[in-house]
Amino acid sequence: MIAILLSSGVALLVALFGTPLFIRFLVHRNYGQFVRQDGPTAHFTKRGTPTMGGVVIIAATLVGVAASMLVSERLPSASALLALYLMTGLGLVGFLDDFTKIRKQRSLGLTARAKIVGQGFVGISFAVLALQFPNDSNRTPASTKISFLRDTNIDLAFAGTTIGLILFVIWANFLITAWSNAVNLTDGLDGLATGTSLAVFGAYVLVGIWQLNQSCQRFVAAGPRCYEVRDPQDLAIVAAAVVGACLGFLWWNASPAKIFMGDTGSLALGGALAGLSILSRTEILAAIIGGLFVIIVLSDIIQIGFFKMTRRRVFKMAPLHHHFELSGWGEVTIVIRFWLIAGLFAALGMGIFYAEWVVS
Image 1 (tube, rainbow, N blue to C red):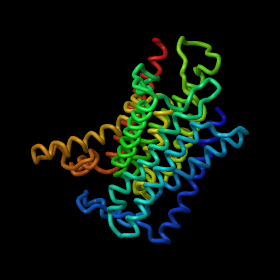
Image 2: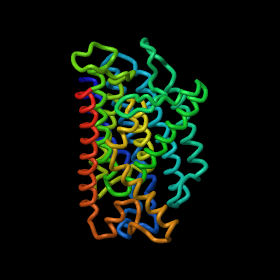
Image 3: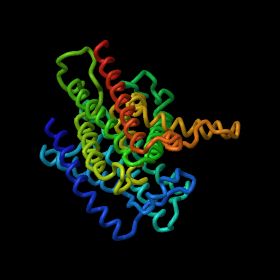
Image 4: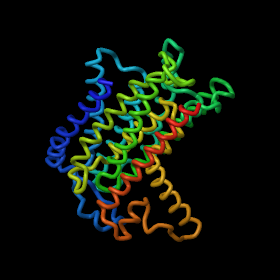
């Protein structure tokens, strides 16, 4: 437990005191945000606000995990390294996207092909590596079985080892793409994605702690069923570091934002969420815990699909938070209410997670 608290505390301090230093650097280099012209007019005042703040979130997370491992006098597990690899790798893709926007002085960054190649490389390599590194109990960080609260009986390796690996890579990359895009779409108002991430990753800290206490690799004091997760403690440490990093960053990202996380942060957080859901065997549960992210993605899909079919719009603008902006809601009002919804979804997910263990 001390290692988990230390990870979060160090990440919090690094983000809280490192963000203003990074803001000064970005202002000095004139690295500011470009705003889409078809968005709410109120956003035009945000043009020039420093972006790429996700660099701080990633750095704080890495330092927090490293400090925890150093004090614990042990090396990070394969699961922790894989989660951090996915987070950092996607963050790098986002950084290149943000930097391209700044360098070319436009609101569009990398080409779609370049983004797909970058995300694909990180996602595929993560998926392949996640099925390696068995421990003494022959458990690998990930499983080819689709998971809800734990692994289900739906095994993607049913057709053979090679085909199973291919199907798992496809499934894992679907989750990675979905979550990275979900956080990216949510990052449209000051502090919205950051605060939502606090609730989601906070829930994953609790998931990791519970799985550790009920791990099949140790004596289970109560309950007929244990969790076959390879490294639950390290996953909780990573999730706690992300919580601390987001909390420290939110101090500067809350309205009026002094800095934006940019694609660097949104893709990194989406990757971290995807990685934690896969490695903790809670892939479908993540859609409940991160329910607000799912709603925002669905609003975008509904808007695009309905417009293509009827040439009419369901919302005044998608994603959903912009619809409420154009309906006259204040930005802070939208953000706070969406945070509350995010917290309710996280609580609902944790309730389902715990209830399954109680009744099993």
